[in-house]
Amino acid sequence: MNALSKVCGSGWPPVNIARAHLILSIGLTGVLCEPVLADEPSTAIEVFTDSMNPVANNADGITVYYIDRIDRLQKELSKDLPANPEVAKQTALHRFQRMENKLSHELENAANGLVQTMQYGIDRYPAIVFDGKTVVYGITDVRAATQRYQQWQAGEARP
Image (cartoon, rainbow, N blue to C red; front, side, top):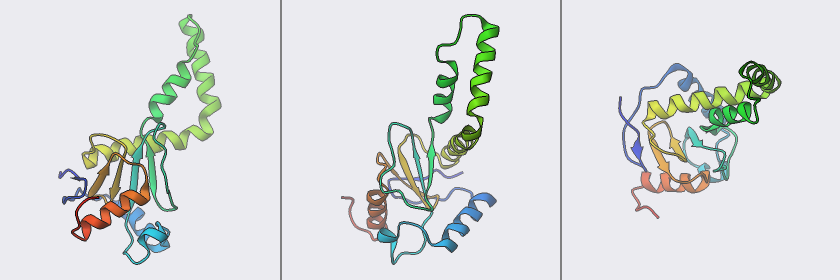
């Protein structure tokens, strides 16, 4: 398995069916960063971040993974638990059940994000991945990362 290009290089990880469907649906709906990518072919953009690094200039069609959501859930469930193990277990279970509706989507997002980071070979975040093969590290501003990606594609020097 090839690792992603680090800040705009080459390489191509294996593509799975779900990812191909995602790229196809994004391409068909044409909802990616219109001001930035107006005359460019559709580009699949994935953002890998945490709750401390919010995404700037996000647009419809961009997938954002919050990698730290599983750790935050664990902290929420274990906060101020009673000393008695059986009571603590029941309290944590009750908290989990109350959170279940919203939580299911968030946990799925975090798990999918962790799988994608392993598949792509991403070793830190924040990171923004273009077309599953090129990554820009260290920023969560989608517009700025897209500009760097486009400059790299055009053969220009990094800003």
